[in-house]
Length: 234
Image 1 (cartoon, rainbow, N blue to C red):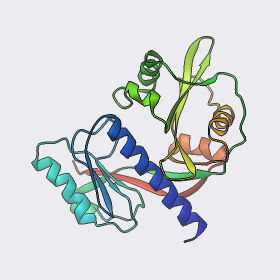
Image 2: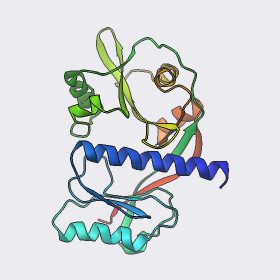
Image 3: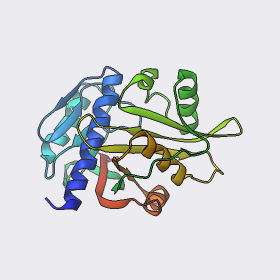
Image 4: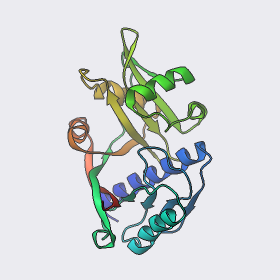
C-alpha cells in the first residue's frame, strides 16, 4: 500500500471510529460487515446512515440497507462513499456533496490564547447551539476518553471550536467540526498548537470541502482522497 493509500485508509478508519463512538453515546445499534457500516436505528443530525468502509464495497448492499430502513419506516439518510468508488447513480441515488480526506503530520504542541477544553454540560450546550450541532453530542461526551471538545473564547464569549477524537485503535487524531462565529477570523495555528499539546506526536486526519478545505490546506494538511455522500434522488 502506498503512503497516500495508507493515509486514506487511516482517515476512513478514524471516521468509522467516530461513528461507532457517537452512536454508542446515544445507545443506538449498528451492524458492521467487512464492507459496510449500517445504523440500525436513529441517526444523529449531519451523519450518514451507511458507510462504505472498504474500497470497492458492494454498492447493492449499501443501497439495500437504505431500502430496508425505508421499508421499516425509519428515516432514510445518506450513504458515505468513503473511497468515492461506488456506482450509485444507477441505483436511484444522487450526490449530496463531495469533500476531500486530509492528513497532516503531528503539529508542534503549545499553548494558544483563547483555546480550552470544555468540561461543563452548560458550555457544551452553548457550543452546540452556536455550531448548529444540537442533538449530536450528548453531555456524556465530556467524560468520554476519546473526545476532546475544544472551544475558542475572546472577551468572555465563545467564538469558535473544534472536536479532536482519538480512535480506539490508531496513532492519529480525527479533527472535525472546526468552526468560528461569523465575522471571526479562523485560528488554525492556535487550534493546531492546542491539539498538538493534548495529543502529542499524533498525525491529524479528517475531511473538509470548499473554503474550509482551503484553510486546512494552508495550515499544512494534504489531500489523500475523495469522500462522497449519496442520497436518494428526489
